[in-house]
Image (cartoon, rainbow over all chains, first blue to last red; front, top):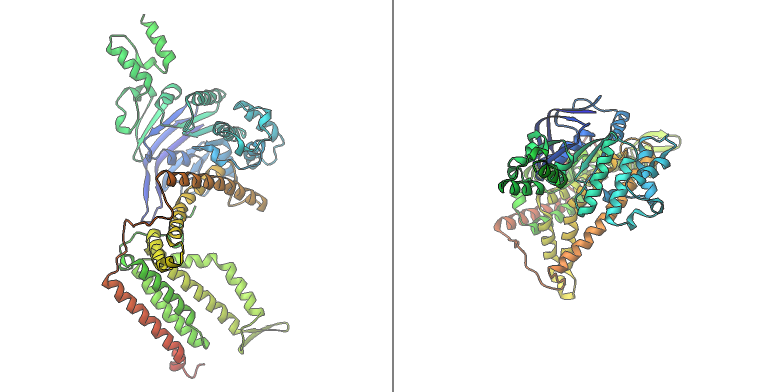
Length: 282
Length: 285
């Protein structure tokens, strides 16, 4: 799927004194065959950018093309088109566990399928498959989502999005508030989903994750796109001006380089690849 | 989503914004009293309502409250207007004389429509007055003003400061909850809830998917808040000072005198049964 931003401007509370310009003339092409990471400090317009993709927001000016669908202020979308768009683009909000509401886990996961495809008879099967994918077994089906732990709630919410089999997943800080172990498990899950052909757009502050999983990075600041490129190319340079941190593995590699080791940073993605790189140079 | 919230504080710098909240509260009460004082014959009532309206519109201009917002509010009151119409047609006000039509055996009186108009005008005027107050005064100032009025009641152990604290906490949560609602609205829309179209069943389900998480979130938030207050040593019985003290100036005294004069004049007019239209067009009525 191809997503094109063409001269997109977006302002909150347009025509009032509370006006905030969140995006300024954004031009961007996203190919969902690769994992795109959108990074930048808080308030730089990352969330606004992603919310334009499934028309939760409509641009103040310009157009966002999502395959056949065009999100622009000039054209009103039909209800069916909009539902079709949203069923293809799964949106996982930050702290998705807060949106659970049904009385059982299974019902909550089925919710999306039954909204988008009311005639689908296989909803239960799909919901169970999605729960299995996120690692929750049968014992969870009839439990109340409010009795679960934070991590389990998050998994249920993710299953709720995966259940209607979107073609693209937008992840808004999926690892916020998780411990290191759960972070890794979750990112491995998304990697697996991506390998099955689901496009991923990732918004995050964690540069280690960006370096390891993303193939393209979009750096935003103050509503504008400052840099686009591969994670290696962007993170090797100075990133502090955009309130980003150099990944830990790069800090380590820099120290090794300072001691005279030969390391090609373009090949380093995480600790494993760093070790390989050290071995390669003997 | 339409983010227009009726009577939300708008930070302009007008004369009305700078007045003391205590004065504004008193003025609001007096204006509301005069709105309800407009009675008597129809012509007299509408004259008095008209005077009120002129004053209120002038105040709206000064405080930069958008009249458009008020008219927009009228649109959402259409069910009430229709209901009032029906009630007034079937139960016409006392001493109705002007028959303008008939449905079967039922006489339709002109007074029914006048009565509906009267109620709507009063309601809109009241809304406007409240809007002027809340959009020119911060919630903090308002609570401070209200708690000043209840201060004498402390002698009879009325928990005036506790109530002020509760009100200011409640007010503080309104924007947070609105933000949370919007976040949930977006989250559930991207899960396929169609809040605008769809069947009634679908809408009810959609609203459930907003309300349940909202309740859960607000309980969690209030828990956190209670802990945060306790961790910082909050004592509900303690006497507190304010960061911004209320300051009564000459300007406020002048305004108080003006408003009082206005209300006294209004009472006099009502008592005198002043009928402006009858005075000018004695033949028409």
